[in-house]
Length: 131
Image: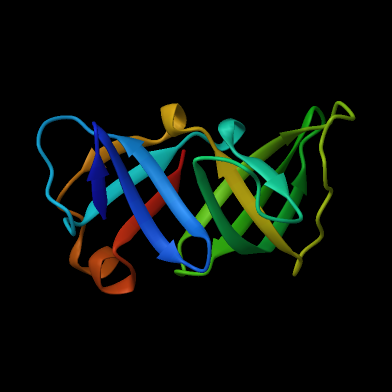
């Protein structure tokens, strides 16, 4: 984790990164827990030109009528849920097992805490959730 003018950057390596607006003072290397709403995440076949982007594998696809819900396991082992509208604007329609990129704006990342559970800390320097 690094900090730059009120924005934290979690570099997960290989082009994966998460940015979040920071509240209060934070130290580089500090573990954090971040969440992002499922409807704010975009799925693409390759890395997007976005502040936050992580790669993962689609584990579940559920058609919900007006949207499709995707459960994606990131390279760090975190699971994220993505809601993609079924309005014809989606850039990709991945199937279970496909590799995808998830991307979103910094404004959609929310810092939950700076004291993640021991399990989350052991798994990765950042704990991702989508709610």
